[in-house]
Amino acid sequence: MKFPVGDESCIFPGERVTLFQQDLRKKFGSSGARLLPTIAWQCKHDPTSHNGENWCVLSIEQLADLTGQCARSVQRAAQCLVQAGLLEVGCFNEDKRNRTNWYRTI
Image (tube, rainbow, N blue to C red; front, side, top):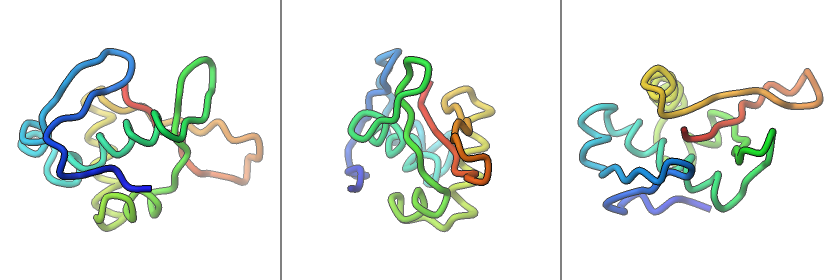
């Protein structure tokens, strides 16, 4: 299921802050502007709970498919969003061989 990328605004769970796509695009580029609302949407509609927080469990390739970006662009955008404090990344898989990341918006 894809997040409607053309939506003008997105609401992040938790802090209920509204950011506009235009502002995200200026600060994080088109990849970051597509990635953050996609993760927020996935956490809301297909959550995996860990320590009382909703996370989405997706590989970089899955995120690239959802956002229409290449995997390397998504990886760079995720790193920028983590550094900006808008995205949290974890790996809480029970099987240590499974390295799929867990994502949530802050």
